[in-house]
Image (cartoon, rainbow, N blue to C red; front, side, top):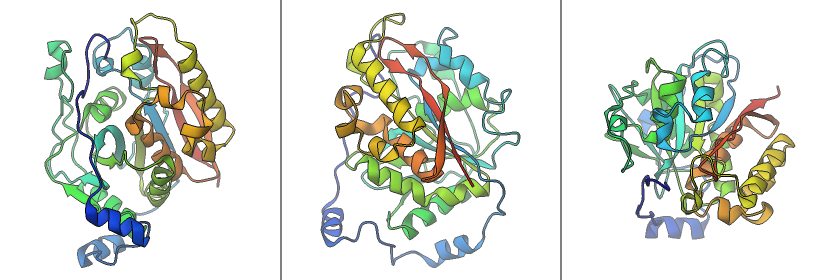
Length: 317
């Protein structure tokens, strides 16, 4: 990332032949008839409902956020509990949609015990590779997420029983919830699909908000690593204009424009040459619902082009 690169040279997943045929038939988006009896039983064991939680999109920027006190966003993340950003009570569990986990079809990590800490970056200071965030896994949340998605036609949802937390999850969480005592599950993104697909996927997850689950989308408001500059460099026009457009569209409820950002936003392809770090926004926006009100809760920049713009989505009931 300028001085170093994270997750470079990654191969992009391609849809399988079966998925392609299913899409031609129109099967994608329909309930999966192969839902197991176990999943159905899980669906009957409902968690007691309470006040609906807000959803959040967090721009996590560089992995150095984990150690660099000079990054303004670090202080925002550390204020999460003291400022009660997500409310007075801690969530029962956290579902993180990270731009650092891409799969051809939705996948959840089903971890019993503590999550491993994935250091999915290279060329950074050695202390960063010693950091651990051993939050408990959330297998019940993983199964509930799988159930909701498959009922909405987003199946089959794969289970990964070994994958821990990538830095899109553990870096902000270690600052937000430093005790690492809240169960965490991750959900992948599908970069061969579009914003509307991820928005609708998020809509299927809306019931989780009333079950004590905090849904976080972890990505970046702007994400073009090839155009990064020195830490204190001025923000270029293209980045400032895209960031301003996104804020205006969200705060004014133009969510369909956000879903179609590549054609609606200025410099959309420059701000996001690859959509992995933007689709987490669409998921949490969908999970909040059409009547959700957006609020920007942080804004800062580093390295000229990395926006740390972060948003809360509150549903008006």
